[in-house]
Image 1: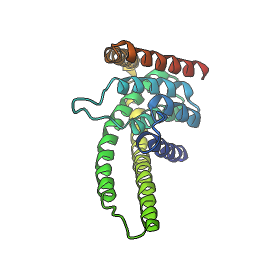
Image 2: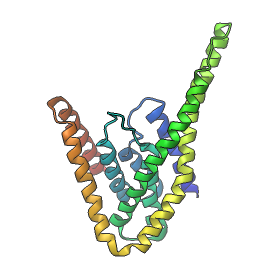
Image 3: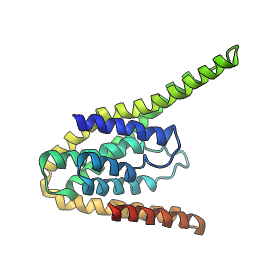
Image 4: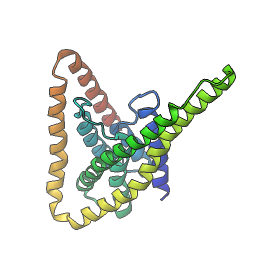
Length: 229
């Protein structure tokens, strides 16, 4: 339970960067996986799951009405579910468990997006009620309260989402890996096929020279990080 609570707090901090802060991309699954792996001491499985989720969500462009999954919630839940099952059960089928964790992460990302959207609507209603008070000091104080409160609300919603979803995802991962042991090879093949399909989608999305350079740079940085770890 201590790991779940710690990972929930980490998700809340990452959500600040992803949705209410500097947007340095630390909330993306491939980076969040490093933190989850450090907490659970399952770095190999964490990176394996995180890279798959990263490629899948990186291939989804927020265009033509598409909605972005909550990559912070989905990434932490999916990666942590796989890592916690491996840590608590001693299962040696890392690829199979990582594939199942990635599946639960995809589900959590969609659920987290719905929760964040409704929470965001409530947050926006509270923010638009801001009116300039009579004095500059009161206005400054009220504005600071709303800015800090807005950020804390984002962090709290994401942390609470992970706190609720992670035990469910870990239980589902444990159940599936226990009951579907005969399809381990197929699940590991799916784990390889999904990022391959996502990679092709990314190549099409970055099909011009300028964007291709950024994609190549990101790929090199990711490979360098994985190699160093």
